[in-house]
Image 1 (cartoon, rainbow, N blue to C red):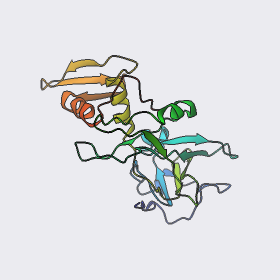
Image 2 (image 1 turned 90 degrees about the horizontal axis):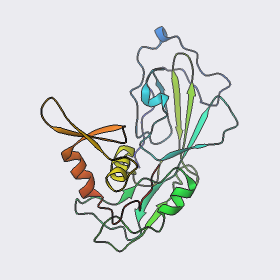
Image 3 (image 1 turned 45 degrees about the horizontal axis):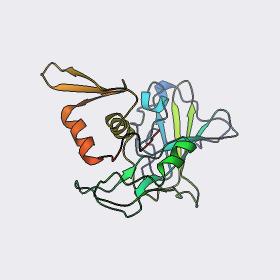
Image 4 (image 1 turned 120 degrees about the horizontal axis):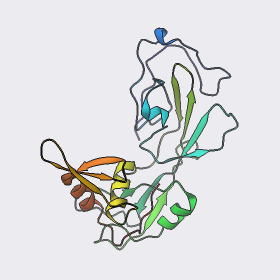
Length: 223
């Protein structure tokens, strides 16, 4: 897998586990790093304290909170990706790369489910992440008044899972918690809100349905 470049914000060396991270003043930071959804490899970034994605500790990878001895640092570990046991290919040319559930119980239920590709007889299985010396890749987050520090350790040795928004849209389409609510934009295009979290056009919803035509409702559970 590819690696992500380190922060270019400052030449000051730091590690997320330092007793104190650099207490730069905002005026001393010429520019903050843009948010990296798919941070990969050993990398460090400094985000604005009001960066919403950083505040929510977002990631394209399926990450879950892990116990950490330092109460000032949030540690998250990668769960890998859900693949078809037969490694089939969808009509779109894409591989099945579903998002593992964060909850252990829900993730256990995902395994062994029929492949969402109706033309395939395979079963879903978890490909765990072992990109950090045989252990899952880890992400670390640390908040200060003037910045949010991020550090990743390890290189993901598996395909990217589907984005969380796609997983939520697919779950809503095939037996989700709430019925999608539709509205019409200023241009007359119909928009659909799923679970009150994201807005998609009719074309985007149709794309999700064609990409992952689930066999039965509520078969796949995601975080």
